[in-house]
Image (cartoon, rainbow, N blue to C red; front, top):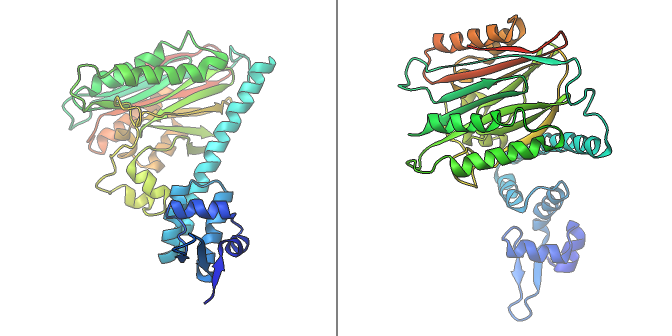
Length: 364
């Protein structure tokens, strides 16, 4: 098989010579031969499939490090490589939708338009809400914190020696925003609060402590969602229940990569290993931030893993669909977790978007 000069290979692979030199330096696409005197690179036709795959993946915006993994996998297991590409693109679409919501929100704010269908006071739409926690039947202390208010819904799951203090501090930082932050400042307020908690909450602790956090702060007819870790948010709309957060866990990353099924993840020995948490580390504390439109009739559930790892998705859907009030849903979900053995602390908060008068709420 004859050799191709770098120019000929660039034309055949739809990559520029400059890109080929970069990919050689990164070990992504190594030439078949490099002339020892001139340093000129030569390739062979057998390298074209990998080069063309690199070109297509760069076109869809995949990072170079991930492209190398996909190309290596494609050489041994093409169907698995296809799953990885599909999982990557699903994540891109989710992040793009979140950015689209944010752009719409900023355009409305800066142009003086009302936020979504409502106004800052949410017009006639109100929230009915409830929250509750339980130590469970195994853990010696309760390290979960849940809060529900007229504008804020929050659940945090603490871990380590100072876990209870960590989760409480995270939720308290957001409660302070309920009356003070509105409009275009809501996402900045959430991000700043999370950063303050992550930097300041573990002074004097043993260093093994932290918390997850999922919270929603309403503004106009939208809610701002902040999420770190594996506490979750669900939405019941039009009779259908969907999860609107993405777990920051090792097993979820394996599911995304196509190397683990959702069913296998439930029994994986490292299913509780977090990739992101508020643990004092800047690398681990990057929150997901997004805006989400609220529609009258929506029901939202936030919960810790002590609920969703014990209570199956069918039971969660049934309770969200049938419970008359948020307090009923909270009580029934906690009871189901305890009936399932209560191996962990359990926390949940439920809110309904309604059009029939003032907001009300309880703590279970």
